[in-house]
Length: 391
Image 1 (cartoon, rainbow, N blue to C red):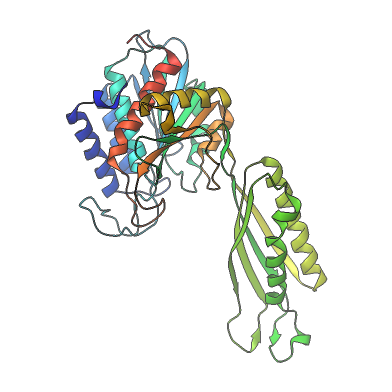
Image 2: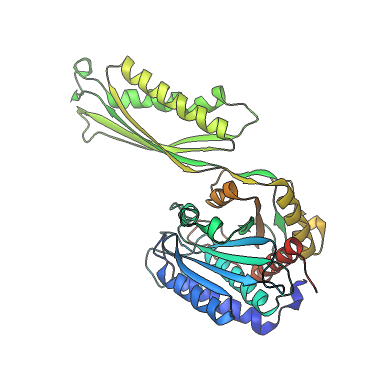
């Protein structure tokens, strides 16, 4: 459906919802107010079923098509949580909660899916069933996995699943997507080097963890370039290095931590294995001991070919031109826990332009309300394309 089919009153209502969510950000699984408001609105829309508490604070709504829901079932997902950032003042709807803000646009994602749910509940000219999924804890809490573990896919018999994310610097009304890996896996690692402290003037009597840690940093920074296929993107970044308390003391230990991002399970596995080998070898060579922890995070977000093709055709319809849809975007090394859902069911993850705004996770960021009707139109057209319609 074209963007202009939405009434001004409907668009105004969406903006009111979005800015209310923006003013009341909540982190991870503590999305109690947001989830309650979502459930209240879905109930008011007349959905056939609204269930709360999935994945702790997730909300799931069901909309049956004109044929009573018989046939295919697809899921549409939006994330609800915010980030621990202090928002930069400058707008009337600034966050009312110190140290918390919607710096990734989840307030907008939630609003677009609410608008979609309202429209579909009022216009059930499609076959099958639509399941709207409002998920907590995308920002590091693996809320998608928590909802899956609570039976999201099996309980609601979801066969395909789709999501949309805003993208700053891409013009409003444009879309980007690719088949296959679109976002990276995300793992974290933590290392403590246990050595032997001593006087800085007598280093021969000590085992210096700073020296050992420096060698480990250099070795790990060259690891990716020598063990991974050059065509298989991977990133290893050491982001903290802490040791020592005085200029004349060689410390007893040093701690390091960082992140690993990859676009393939193979690269992810080999990096983890080789990191352990390099760290243990260097520590052993210098009479130190390593305490190394590698924490598996989000998997690679992999779009399925058939569903990606469908998403591209729908986006081109909404954008009113195939030229406004880049279906060969380069994957990004950020991570997204929608990846867990795409491991369970075929589907696609697409980016929609947020216009000339601050970058994601920036304290000056704000979701662009001009994107909202495009997101709603994308989801609504996707439902009709995936399930069929009687328009």
